[in-house]
Amino acid sequence: MSRLGKRPVKIPSGVKVAVNGGTVSVEGPKGKLSRSFEDIKIEVKGDEIVFTRPNDEKPVKSAHGMVRQLVANMIIGTSTGFTKTLVTVGVGYRMAIQGKKISLSLGFSHPVSFDLPEGISGAIADQTKLTLTGADKQLLGLIADKIRKFRPPEPYKGKGVRYEGEQIKLKEGKAAAK
Image: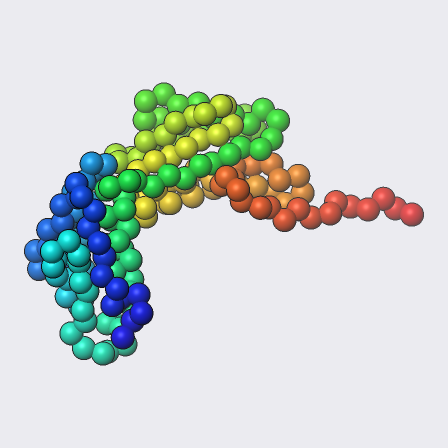
């Protein structure tokens, strides 16, 4: 049996979980999330959610722990939320936010604008640090990656958009001719 899949998930106070067939709905102070799962039986027992699999076929076994972790992420997201921080490194690289639109100056001839989807909010600490918050971990990571892809860090000077704390392995430049 899956080591992760057999561990129950605790439901914190203030979070409501409803299971209808294969659909799990989680509602908390940070928002609502809903997702449907197949092959794994999900039950709410008191203040815990228990995951069992009906058989030991390979696809069902491999989905057991993943389904448990996805539901755990839904509960964490609706109770406390997730954050990702992006940092720009480079001369003249800056970010600004107006409502749900982020304007990025990344060394192009024009500013790049990006619309944040519903459920994701952004805040700019200074002009080079963007903090994204949201309840859905998967959507938050997808949006952060899309913003990073506008100007990923280059390997010689490290200029570009990177995650906070990300280490970029810098290459050595051309050596002078001897």
